[in-house]
Amino acid sequence: DVSMTYDSARDRVVLFGGVDGTQRFNDTWEYDGVAWTAGAPPPAGLTARSSSAMAYNAALGVVVLFGGYDSYLTNDTWLYVDCPGIALSPATLPDGHLGAPYRQTFMASGGAPPYTYSLASGSLPAGLALGSSGGLTGTPTAAGEYPFTISALDAAGCAGSLFYRLFVREKVNYLVGAGNGQPNPSRCRVFTA
Image (cartoon, rainbow, N blue to C red; front, side, top):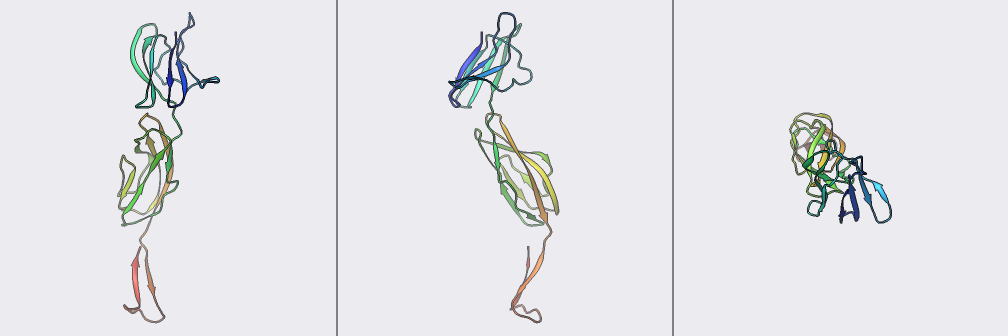
């Protein structure tokens, strides 16, 4: 016997496992009202089983599978998440400047809020820190090129990531003035960027 429930957020029936008399299954199938299609592959550790309880949890937006029989009775709980594509923005980052405050906020979309942000690979510039709510803030203390990947994890356990390259530029002094001749404090100023 199989486990089955209705996923109201995606408007489809989800079926898991079952037995054909001699063999148990651990595959997932989805029915959209027209056709059955294979669902997401089971996570590692989810054994082939029958007689599981399955329900849709609307608060989390996931299908929950509990227990069943896989040669022995099980009492484990699994979440079936057919993850959507989670997109991050912005697509690129503005340059930072050595010794100048930097602030950028990452935003995720396409999943189930709230999102938790983390550094998936690479290194942030010295002096900058990434908060779990997506804020990249601080004051860079070393110039250079910094490649890294930011990941966003949604409330259902689905993740998306995006590769970034942040350039931290040296400070530049430049002179802006009016007219020709010797510098005159009333006609020109030195700016630091």
